[in-house]
Length: 412
Image (cartoon, rainbow, N blue to C red; front, side):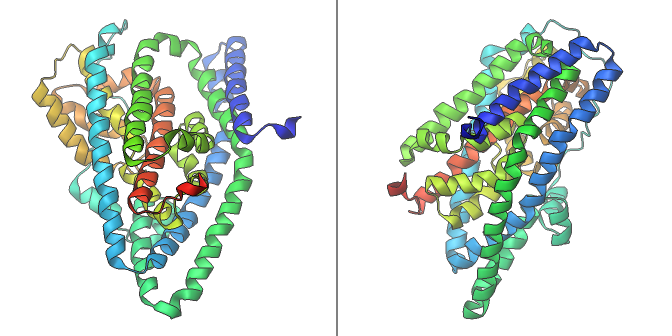
């Protein structure tokens, strides 16, 4: 009987079981220090799982991207696919930024907060604004070994592009290395399947730790804010991305069904990164070609984080509302334009959305301490952001595959 339950089912079970255990422990151990100690210990399960996932990412991105580019064999083709991909990412980013502002202006969750505003204390988030120099130095790796050790996807992508183009230029001489890297990619897919057996334990640990320290009650206190943001995420994922898929000729419902496992994994662990290896496998099953997946998906994890991007305008305007600060149309457009650029420097930055927001607040006369209003539920909001990021990158990969005529619809 138990063997018949799919991995997705086990993840759901772990999700609810983790919440139940966390709430029971919290009620039976009211001491805050005891709760934190338990949460720290139980979160080892999620830490182990996420570390297992992270150990896969660098070799998987490198091998799949190099093989994909080497098989293209033509720099013009790489450039054409790259331009289409970046244009789509910019289009999706603009829609996500605009939708975040529309929802927060219509629903006005900041007006409903019945709690004292934080004082001038700092939020604990490093508010250093991303600069052009910091972005470029992050993108261009000084050592590919260092980039792989730190799981910095964008620098790995840059190196892999150069490596793949060089490998393709060798012709017959490079075929043996292409076959070797292709074999490495398949080995990493096998490793991914083994690691996924730990997913329910990772989900249990993550949820249990959050509920133990925060309690189910935190959801009730912020229910309107959470409902507004999640409503926006669902609208973006289903209506906006669904419409894009419909216009391009993609079977959106089928795509969602196929990626449900990595989608749930990203949601329950609040980590888009956790879903990356499984996304490669599922997009192949959907019918996207290897070379498009290996090119578009890693770029998407740096340039197409739709849920995180939407959150930045939503959160900034929400903080403004709680302080009674009215943002003019011009200021909101300025905010969008700033985030259109600075959001591209998010990859590899811990708690990236909060860092960018912290840097943005002073530019509109808002105290950085406003972030304290969101830190308590950031984990809950991050779960939705991560799941939306996964759907956005799945649609992006399918769209580019369709544009390139490499979506095998007869297999769907």
